[in-house]
Length: 141
Image 1 (tube, rainbow, N blue to C red):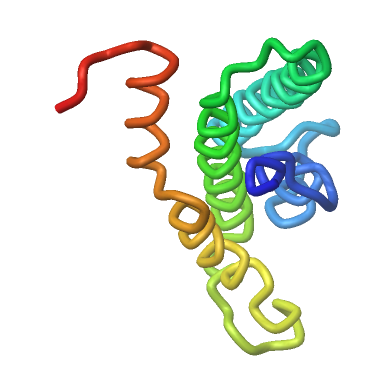
Image 2 (image 1 turned 30 degrees about the vertical axis):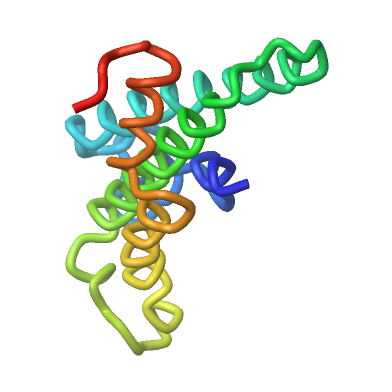
């Protein structure tokens, strides 16, 4: 369930960034941010496909019990990246905490919430240990 947070909701990142930073000929003016958003979108699509594949493996009773650790880890990390990009796109305005313009600090509060997502349900470090031992079959420390 926690892994689903990596999919995010709401408007596409590119649109949010273009609204905040402006666009040139329909493209986000900040080329570095545009590249970061493109990388995120590719990773997000890959994660969606991984979730679908996992569903197929579960139906066929072929999924590793540790696959939930993989999905939880990557979903939480993807969600953190998404909110980092939202904060970057929002600039200093995204740091506002209580104004109407920032809708009560939605961006800042969402960004801070992602830190908890990587802790609840097993920290990212614990998930990586489970993946190392159960999927990659690496020896324990």
